[in-house]
Length: 139
Image (cartoon, rainbow, N blue to C red):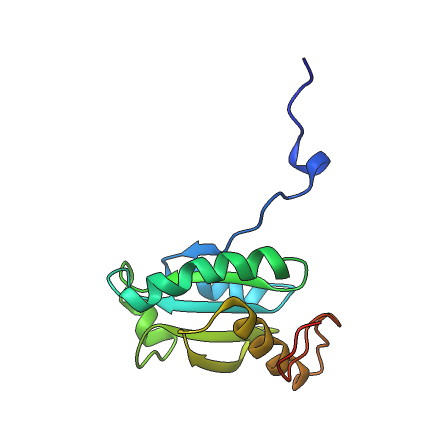
């Protein structure tokens, strides 16, 4: 019988969106991340946010090498709504180098979120992978 593979031996395995429900933790993640982040802010009771959450896992799986995907639930920490200037949820925000660079509503499919992020990053000088066409057609 062989020993189970260690994460370093087997890669990271399937990637999923990071779940965050604390504003201070999310701030630290945004400020220290070495790669861009896309964050969906949602309420735990909101049907639209729940529908988008599986799309975030799909996005994380396909973009994990160049983008950190975060699913931020605002229900547990009321400070999150104020800290991130949320008018309504779900909301999707892209951060790069610790700063917000784009924002939209959260009712998007994984490919739409990927193109939205790629387009936002191009305006900052970050070049997303060539497989992402910010104009809408994935290659």
